[in-house]
Image (cartoon, one colour):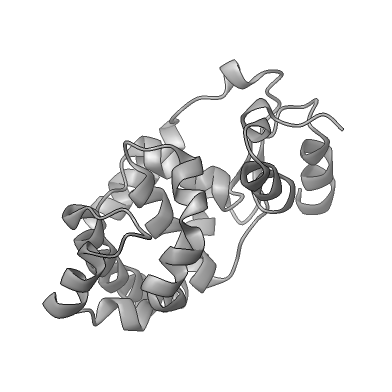
Length: 190
């Protein structure tokens, strides 16, 4: 079966591509996980973060947003020496501040899911890219989401990170049209 070119580099990327990437997510815990992981990816490859994903889950209490929001200096210092994750102080501190902002969004909208999916009226945008070179790194929509998230106090949510987040959580289906997942996701979720 034909797959998106980026998914052919490793087994972990193939697995992620085949089972998760582009599938609409409506679970707040997973939405928070991907928000933190996409922010951690800034300046790095997705495969680096994907290979550290289990360590991230363990280090960040399975991405329990309430627990992460309560992290103190002792916990963040502990994370800074954890070899299983990206040990970047700004990224670790942003996970904590993003948890607080995430909780505020949940309070305002009832769930983060309700908030983030409003940007696409609850339905994924199904693109029809013929090759990977056509896929943008950001869009007007990712710029709008980025701006809104920043106004709400989120960090590491620039328009490029937001677009990667949109792809990861299924706000957009960016599988190329010749990829077997494009039609599967389009049929099931559009």
